[in-house]
Image (cartoon, rainbow, N blue to C red; front, side, top):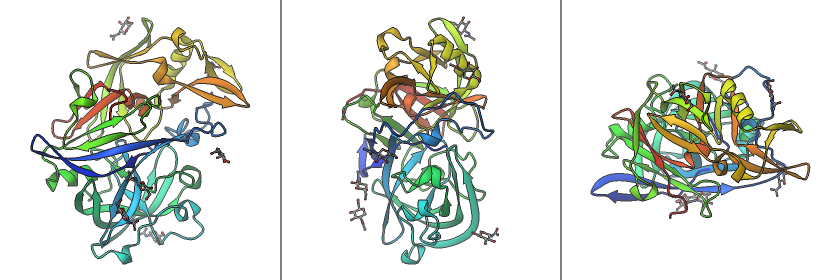
Length: 377
Ligand SMILES: *[C@@H]1O[C@H](CO)[C@@H](O)[C@H](O)[C@H]1NC(C)=O
Ligand SMILES: *[C@@H]1O[C@H](CO)[C@@H](O)[C@H](O)[C@H]1NC(C)=O
Ligand SMILES: *[C@@H]1O[C@H](CO)[C@@H](O)[C@H](O)[C@H]1NC(C)=O
Ligand SMILES: *[C@@H]1O[C@H](CO)[C@@H](O)[C@H](O)[C@H]1NC(C)=O
Ligand SMILES: *[C@@H]1O[C@H](CO)[C@@H](O)[C@H](O)[C@H]1NC(C)=O
Ligand SMILES: *[C@@H]1O[C@H](CO)[C@@H](O)[C@H](O)[C@H]1NC(C)=O
């Protein structure tokens, strides 16, 4: 799943308590632009999964800087917990594909560490499609050199999804979900090569309300100063993906959703929920339809929390988390940063990850959550 949020990574190498960790600060650039409408219309058209919210959402993109090859070729990428493959635009993409031409492109002929693979690939994200062939090279990030990574050189990037985004490509941090056959995903390779001691990583995203934009990903550890209290661990609910089980969701003691799987996805901006739950939520929040949107009051203090129960603990989303102000036809309206999907699971994107610090443990196959400390450096 691809978000319209932007990860700008400055890369540094740090050591915590003598353990090897790789720390990647994330810089979020907010590009609030009223004419770019980022929320789902109340439409249930279309048959593809995960299509509603992401297609037009452009106001936030998180990107990070990496480089590929020898000598290094620089790229900005999204670090996506919702997928497992890595790809970059290729210099071999045709002139006719402007989404590719508008980004930095990997040139294998300029890299002495390039190893051909040549198999074709095709990837489908919630917001668009990418097609190309596989290659192998060294990925440099956070001061580390990850040799022998098989990644996609993209020849075709779907215009609508990728033309105007600031990131060039994507690094999949998934546990292997939908990974190409006979390839080792980024995280698997990182851990096998012992570039970190513990096969975990953690994600800290500052929320949209934070003065300081950004956040960071730490590979091999987590940063206790970035969250409050203890991490609440739950097992992953589906093998090969960063997913957990939500047991109940309530708004003011009224249940809006029952037991459901949820994918933690840095690559999705909003929170997505099954349609039935979403319509229960609209009723619980008394939204009304205005110019095609489900609009709610802008008085945050009069709105309730959405209480999501995970592993016996409540993780509330407050109006500050789920409300966004938008100007449409010169009118200020307040919308939910939550959209429905025609799938029986949730996608907990940046709206959730902006409030909760998350730790991804690939060895114990568990996920830790705790309330983020906002505004900390
Ligand atoms: C990432 O790369 C972009 C483009 O090269 C650059 O403008 C930006 O400053 C870099 N960011 C960091 C954090 O290094
Ligand atoms: C807002 O977005 C529109 C459409 O993408 C673009 O034409 C316009 O220049 C943008 N305005 C600003 C201030 O970025
Ligand atoms: C949105 O669409 C659904 C399905 O068509 C409908 O049940 C629901 O009432 C609509 N919501 C609003 C606020 O009109
Ligand atoms: C690539 O990025 C590195 C680190 O940000 C920078 O030092 C270097 O100048 C960049 N190279 C090019 C060709 O932009
Ligand atoms: C791979 O894709 C190219 C077009 O990009 C096509 O010409 C070629 O036949 C494909 N190869 C295979 C084995 O499918
Ligand atoms: C979910 O929460 C509602 C409201 O608090 C409660 O009535 C219901 O029993 C809960 N269901 C489960 C399965 O915990």
